[in-house]
Length: 222
Image (tube, rainbow, N blue to C red; front, side, top):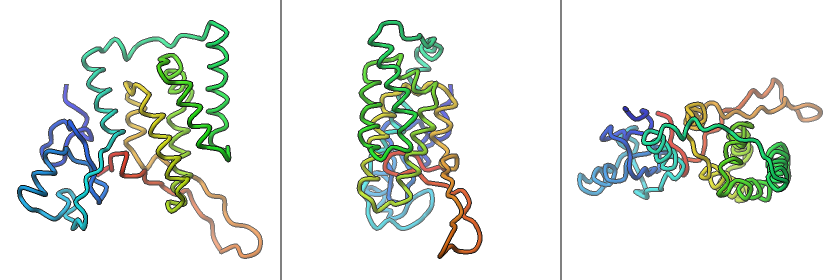
């Protein structure tokens, strides 16, 4: 089966084994971009031809996780169609309620770091909770959390929240096409701002703002 286009290196057009992101936000397979930069002595981004002031290569952990999950789903297709079981024991019911309540409140919570760590704790080594998270719209909710955080990219706490989101997402077996498609399309991550009112309000309204995800963790759509 042919790999999805965004899993392929823009240079070699082959499935990426070690995806890394350059300063322009474009992700390449490490061996291909290292050859471009250090063997051929190029100082530009191959996809955009923008000059690279820094040649630092940042591992794209989320994309690597998604590629690994895609490969596992190809090797064992039965795992992607596993049914979601309902909690039965008292401990499972309590954990399930904790997951759902935390997920419902994480967007508005002033303690996002704690909420994200709670979600991670609920899902670690627990396949049924991971499936419940995806089924309950957890990926879409975390996308909104990232969008909120990126409204102030200079806020270190916001950066830490994005790191926690990546930690939660790294636990999820991304075998369904909808989840993969959502995460790979930055334009779907919108955060609506209400129009300013009262004294000092500017004329007009502020429409939904498209939030680009941090290039450190995700593939940039070409």
